[in-house]
Length: 134
Image 1 (cartoon, helix red, strand yellow):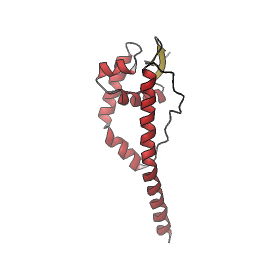
Image 2 (image 1 turned 135 degrees about the horizontal axis):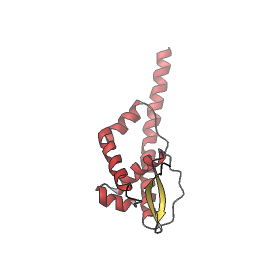
Image 3 (image 1 turned 60 degrees about the vertical axis):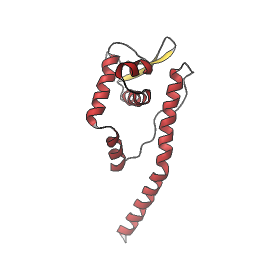
């Protein structure tokens, strides 16, 4: 009896996750688009930046499959290496690192959530800089 109930609950959870996955992907695409518009000189877009993430082994496995740890570390080091020389816009980072603006935006948001970098304004444009460790 107990296993049937647990199996039913697991099936319901899996079905709901399958329904929500496209909405999460659209949410992330819209965040990238909003960031891109802001880079083009538009007014900052007021959005909630923290996307709800599914938890559990499937979510971690999917995320890890997208970008292996060594690659994530290399990307992080490349971004931080450039920002050691001062603030940069995403467009400037894209030129220097040869990464896409969408990828950089995602990585910068992750670094910002960890308190490593911060979004600033430079010459009227959105820019990123290292958080000083006073």
